Image 1 (cartoon, rainbow, N blue to C red):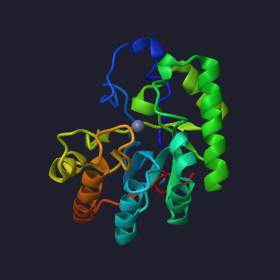
Image 2 (image 1 turned 90 degrees about the vertical axis):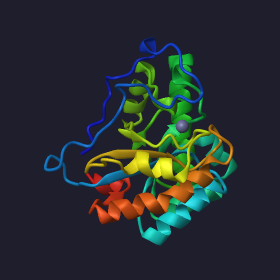
Image 3 (image 1 turned 180 degrees about the vertical axis):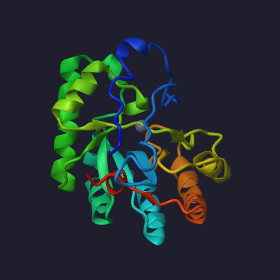
Length: 234
Ligand SMILES: [Zn+2]
């Protein structure tokens, strides 16, 4: 089972961060070491979609490699592109909750936080016809209110322990491949983005271009890549 880290982030601990910041030191999630869980492998996750071109491009690569992933959806994007959300599920992947929008949670009050998270779950459930299991807050920044709301909605918080900075202007397929796979070990959760809605315009093209290289290296290394659900079926 993934050990959801529910005590690492509070709004009070987070004061200043820019739009390019998608995490802070100390906030991460790691699958327990091999032997202590029912599944093993690399958790492949994508944030910020659905996106009509970006998600489709990523799905095409995943289909080619027969690899599943977990897509953390932004509800306001899913409302715009419901067919893309449905395709994610139809293609055999997992959908999860990134948020109603991409606003930083520590600027929202507890009532608004609970309402928006609940609405996001509802929309994802309605459109994708599945009940999401995981919650990853925008920018990786959670608040106590968000964690309580997530618990009440049966959502498990999950962060990541490897990010490829694929949203940045400087990212190249090579840099994304390197950051995603250098020293990669069984049990890690990799964060990529299938959307440029909150990042550098067109960044999904770089991510999609890097994805075959990432999956090739994982394959050569004997690492199983899959969705969080596939690696943690419990
Ligand atoms: Zn995001």
